[in-house]
Length: 157
Image 1 (cartoon, rainbow, N blue to C red):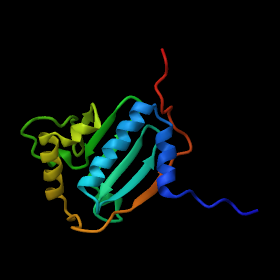
Image 2 (image 1 turned 180 degrees about the vertical axis):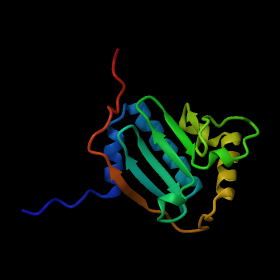
Image 3 (image 1 turned 90 degrees about the horizontal axis):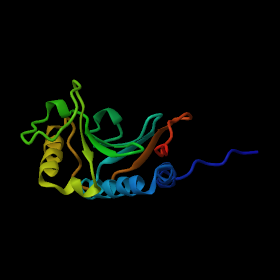
Image 4 (image 1 turned 120 degrees about the horizontal axis):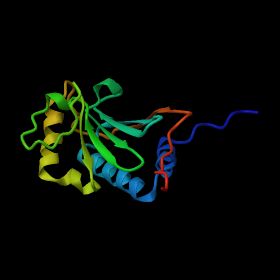
């Protein structure tokens, strides 16, 4: 008997998001729509890790050239700037103190439209070693789905 072919990437991503509480899944889908609208030529790399669902955004097929990641946790969604420590942040909105990555915790997807976040996104794109393509459509690429995962919905106390 043949194994079933893998699901299309969009269906796989939908299944990953369906594991989360509806408000978190909705915010993640909306944030993804906003980012894709701003950068239609980027590729999206999906990692369904043990601790979170991660959607990386990069200019080519190499995840190491990614600029941002949308990280979906059971209780919140963050936008990670993968080289955020190098990024000028005059408004001091970036969080974290690692040597490389900084993040912004989103309260709603429309936070991505705030001028301060738009400016940070633009700055990160300009600082990227690999420029974004001007035209075309990026691909959705499922890179990893961990067999063992933390619960995607918060425990009820």
